[in-house]
Amino acid sequence: MATTQTISSEYKGALAGDIFIQAFKKADTISKRCITVLPNVIGSAMLPKLSYSADFTASACGFDPTGTVGYTEKEVATKKFKVQHELCKEEFHQTFAAQALNLFGADNDIPQTIQEAILSAMISNLGAKLDSQMWNGDNSTDQMAGLLPQFVADATVVDVVGTTVTKANVVAELDKVYNAIPLR
Image (cartoon, rainbow, N blue to C red; front, side, top):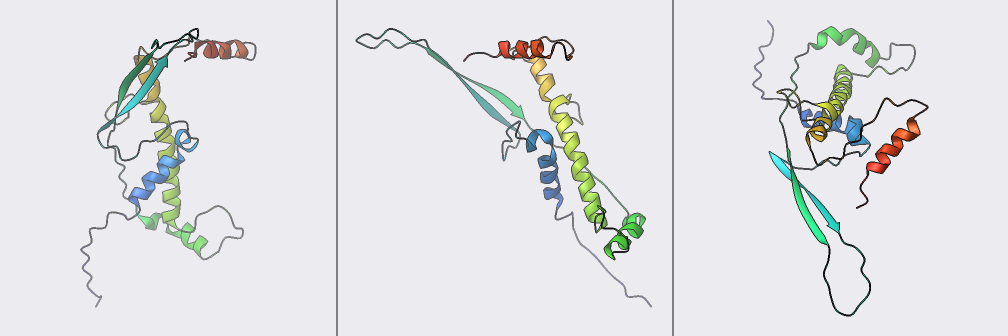
């Protein structure tokens, strides 16, 4: 007679948080430091923007304060997402059991365990999706508010009207961007 087992674990996956951290780090925009990630933001945060302008004046006795300092804030809101999977490891058992026993002739890129393979695939996939949504997300239920749609909707963002870039006009198109950059 088989031994009776009673398991009453509330195990949710010890590495679940680490999976999302690795996926975030895998996104090109974050890994190449194109944006700054604000730590510990729950709900929303305010991003400050300072501007300063003043001109040189001729030297003279006395004090004549000139110039302006501007301070504005942009609210950045977080959005909660989840990824749920239920996988049967038996469907993957043969390939990974053979790899773990070194039954393959060459040392190739097959992960040693099914867990490693699935986690690697998840991290790469979620990193790519995160990168895409960071730039293009439409703020629908299953997407975040992407940067490009927010730039288009924000009247204070400097827009550059360009054409399709070709070998013949690449310098002219870059000049349009360069000329649109404010001096201050």
